[in-house]
Length: 327
Ligand code: PBG
Image 1 (cartoon, rainbow, N blue to C red):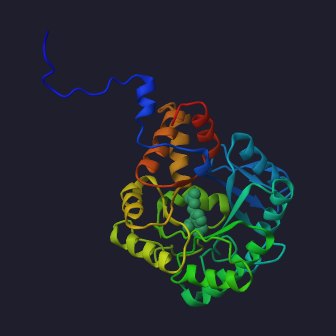
Image 2 (spheres, protein in one colour; image 1 turned 180 degrees about the vertical axis):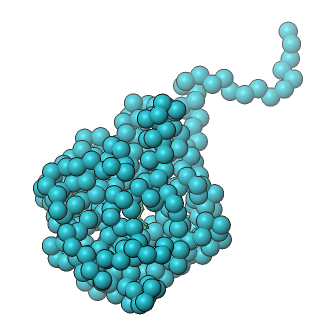
Image 3 (cartoon, rainbow, N blue to C red; image 1 turned 180 degrees about the horizontal axis):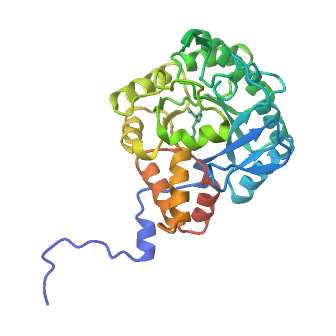
């Protein structure tokens, strides 16, 4: 009888594999993006995002209902307003598209958790994320507008606000405004490390928010940088953010890992439109197994340290978790 002369690895039977998993996914940690078009009645497929829809205000509750049917209990709302102007006034209108969408969802599904994206690019006629002075976004003037938007979302019944504008001081400004309006318990999820990314392409088409001139590199982060992400997260944390975010996810897994290790706040990752569209089109071309690629990419993001994930695949991932394809 031969003696064991080398360490031996665990036999990987199905049960052992499940027992020893280092990363576990839960439907509780998934957030689904919902697009609402104020001019639409019914539901219309989004051309740039196969499998995703624009919802009219008359049917947005259906979006929440579909999520709940898959076990997904969190959504993040993006609005396409009927009108735009220089200062994005439809963004904070009492009966604006997002405000009405929140009310419609809450009226039918009060337990569906509603996060709202707080930004101006979908509402300004120039498509930038703030108030312009000449060709430049005026950081500090923009803060006052963002604050009004966040308060109007909370007043409509939003559960959490997520500023995606990348202005300096935005979390502190929103915290002050929300507290002042009696919304001390509304958490803020900062889009803390948001890179100036080509992966947002399909979203800008879906949300009608491409800038009319220039780009967002003045306020979004340079993909060359890693330490800057830590600094951005530190600022949002110091200003009172409840959750930090890294966006996009797949090309920034190193940043997710570092931010997860460096901060004691929950970390969200946003798997953005381009990441989804790449998988969709590769799968449509018959090049990859969509379901397995979807699972593997989501897993990589959680393995990197994310605690929650905004993803266009939220419903399919929830199915995969329930059916044991992913753990
Ligand atoms: C708004 C905003 C963007 C995304 C989320 N919020 C677009 C941008 O910054 O250009 C992108 C989301 C995606 O690509 O899925 N500022």
